[in-house]
Length: 617
Image 1: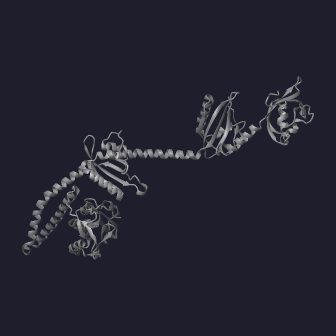
Image 2: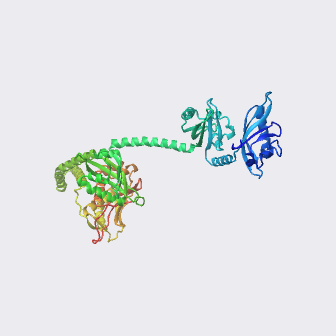
Image 3: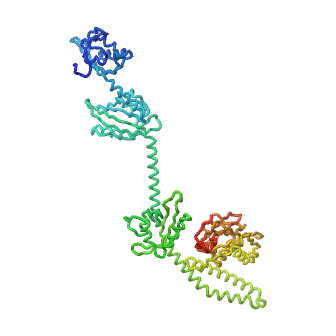
């Protein structure tokens, strides 16, 4: 008995618990020798029990004896020094032949260290957002939480003592859809003694369930039950984020599928390239457009190798312009690995420079071969018709001119009107043919340009002087604003006059009587900005995107009144672009329009005189 790490005792079942035997281990626990307690010679055992524990302890032992049950109780013992020890007592009553209690036998173990560790565990567990627990399942289906931290109140809405012996009622609050999967996960863990891990919903109240996630390690107990040691936490917020992410991902996948389908149907791919590092990424459709094997890794070098030799410079120039303007827009040819030639349209934007050290372009590429072939067929048709019409029309126009100039007084009035109508229409037809030929030359890059330094004031004065008689027919006055005499622009004189004349003619035709058309130009950094302002009816908003397209005119009554080929503004855009500039407009219905274009200002001959494209805000 002396070698057992605890106190063994036998006492009478009297009111003083008179000790008949007590092992020597009582000495370090109480500070008194066992002999003091035998027959209560010096003191009784109750004297060393903490005052707050004596009454309930005596009552608990009394009830166990009455019910002929054993007892396991924890209470405090006060050492002679005043130090408090926690002990666990396990005991039972022995009965005589008559069934009366003969004495009480028991064992007392110092559990102070265990109790201290448990208290530390409770304190630590209380700091966790979830609950630390022991969950026990018996073969007959009974369940309980022998231990649960205070967090169980947040998780299940109950106190630890409410589930220490029975926890079956908690299953009634589990979401109906989760009861069967949860029960099955517990059964499998119990059978295989593998880690239990599961997520399920629990109704703390009767309205909205919370999401819980649990994980525990099972242990088989001697009585056949299974005891899990684990942790359960509330993951409602995380789960909601996850479910929302799943919803967004599903929506994104659907959008991606639609985009891929549209991309494949339109033969349009997407790409991202670094002009600095040469790295390149592109979507699957690009492989189809370029005819590359899908196992090939994209790179800028691979892309460059597919360019048609005649178009390489155009692509390089567009990339360089993108560094200045942020926009890469070019149509060019590629040569596929099988030798076939395709036309593609690249459109991309350069990311903001301060956040783009690698000079990354993000854009699209579309196979426009069929469109280019149709355009070429249309251009060829227009060119053929224009050339075939020009020769006979010249003869007709000349004959009409002679008839209108000779012996007019001898020509009947009715015939004079017919000759004038015929002459006017031949003039219009000649203008249309000239416009068509100009468009053809511009599109083919065959329009000659003699770029030189020109006086802005002189060129605009010439245009105003030439068009004022035409403006007078509409009762419109052309006004040239003051322009610095030394302001020079780099342009072709003939083409500059063509652009200004076209814009002035439009402004005159669409201006109300007794109004002014104002012409001005000024210097902005290294560009000269030309502006022509009218007070006409303005341009409908829905027509703005089409204003510079071929054969387009704004709807309305002015269309029939003022005529036109629908090519003038398209020619202006091409001419300005090929002289290194850009063109645009501002218009508000009912308040008139401002058409403007910009061209490079003339630089000193000692400086680099090569002009580059500029954008106009």
